[in-house]
Length: 185
Image 1 (cartoon, rainbow, N blue to C red):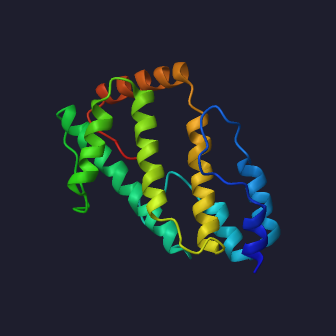
Image 2: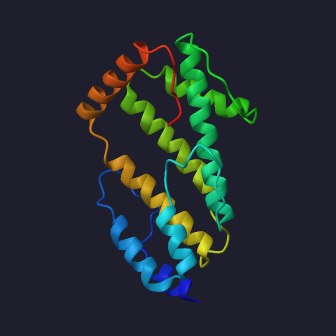
């Protein structure tokens, strides 16, 4: 029942464009969650991340586990494609990389602009998250979906072209000057 009161207070994140101010901050979202959700659900909210750990960790949420696994696979695919492009060895521990996922990674890696590649990947992530959207719009799972979507939308807003270009050049330089490739972080 608490989820109903929480979700009814959250602004819609559908049809948010780059030119429209975000309707809620991550801090406000977490504040509301801590007011309405159980301690267990609050812990899940606190652990929501766009960069899951390499090793799968148990979660109380099927949606969060599915998101984390999908993101790990995407990062592995990106690492594999980047390594192939640089003619470096890259061991894939998982054979669960679909042809479609490898195609997404290849398209992103082929882009000239790192900023455009990241935007492309985030659009893919939003679509993947949308596929996980719970049917019950007043459940804990929906709150977790909302939290992940909010994080993705805020991440899209934080991009700065100059800072990104400088970071890309540094990472590229570091990779090219090392014998080992640490592609998935």
